Image (cartoon, rainbow, N blue to C red; front, top):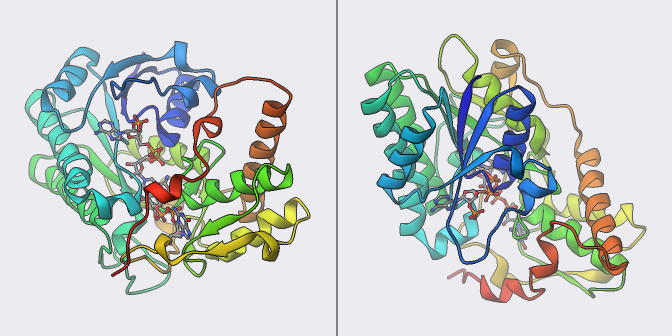
Length: 348
Ligand code: NAP
Ligand code: GDD
């Protein structure tokens, strides 16, 4: 039986990847952070918590990563752990560099010294393009990061490539464009919108306050993107691949589509607040996935409108069930409505 180690198993992608690999017959080991309140809701939601083995790891702590790799002796390592919220990286730039930049390098060093034949997947990102020099973006488009998050991810991207070329390691980057799902974290714009739309529809919330409505993103469906991660590691030759849908939609379009699905007029409920603007944003991302389609055979399936519907339906059902007194693994009921007050960044 093949063994896979997933760092960041409690996150959106980690949970979907754990489920996917279990279905492929893998023995799955997942790292989690030791915190005062357990955070296993996604693994419970997908009914995989008792089917995987969890290991406490902090990406800042070399010893805990070394122990995880040694104990699990995996054939494949998927490095998904990260401070993944771009906005927060402006508030915590050094922590983000430590986790997202140095963290990946710690694993690469461990693999280099311990067992160079371990296959390594690095969760790289379309944020690397920042102010993009061309559209759509491909594997050869210039990187021009616009946030401390992206500059930290640039380090892990480059070290993954460098360890591949310098030491002959099977180390690959997936340059994934935004991918979303009902398991998306609450602070990201898609889920913030779909959760608010559900609450407004049910009379639980009066308004939705957003930042940059003009930003354009290439949004795909997360379960399809974790399959791409696995496919990348099954190739004969290690390489880097873009994963994207090739379609751009503005945040404003997402708002309109989500409100349309519940027959409400966004004009009545949505306002913008400049304190939610980032000190520097990425205005437009759109990927060209022709390389991964040609070489690996992966392509996206779920359309933008289908994705928004999946997320709105899920959040609506959760709040309806909650109002009926049902309890189930879920994040939103513990998420204060005024959380944005705590996370405001000032644009200078
Ligand atoms: P996510 O939901 O935020 O999950 C991040 C995971 O990393 C969580 O399990 C989190 O643990 C863990 N983590 C955070 N800090 C850590 C630390 N110091 N030590 C150990 N673990 C830590 O992110 P995601 O959306 O699943 O994304 C997965 C990866 O893909 C991330 O590296 C992200 O940057 C990258 N990526 C995501 C997208 C996207 O659109 N989703 C696109 C491109 C790249 P807790 O649960 O305890 O917080
Ligand atoms: N989060 C958030 N909240 N974003 C908002 C809001 C708001 O209230 N209003 C407008 N936006 C805009 C942001 O300024 C950004 O331009 C866009 O919506 C998307 O923001 P996020 O959903 O936070 O995602 P992201 O694109 O910054 O980053 C995500 O995708 C990257 C891949 O491109 C994250 O998952 C990263 O980890 C990932 O690398």
